[in-house]
Image (tube, rainbow, N blue to C red; front, side):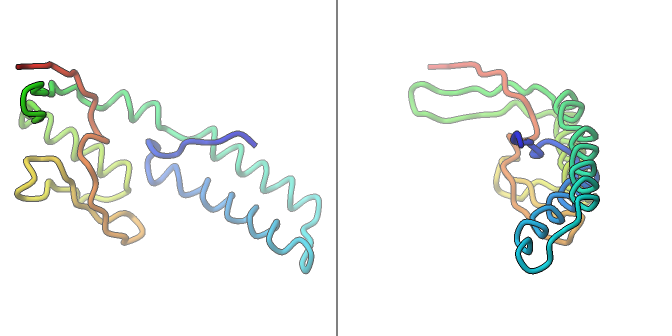
Length: 140
């Protein structure tokens, strides 16, 4: 089986794949004590393939804004050119990817960190650069 990158897929699209792969892992773990039927195995393979085909990571990546990031060659500092529109777009993408509506920039981080609770109720602190593309500008 080839590796399937689910990092940029939305939470809603990742959940069926996680459920199908979990079922397949259960079949593997219990193959000695509770063997699965051929029909069960064919069904879980079909479910995995269908869920993988429905992932939407490419579409989500196209939504990411491109921000100019100034990198100082002198003191190795980094400054991202945030606009209100880019801030909103980044938080919207974070919400879509994690199946939530509470993404927010963490105070005191200059928009470098985003806090949110995903659709399963798990709290995350994420690097905001996961949700935008960078156009680097080197300065002295």
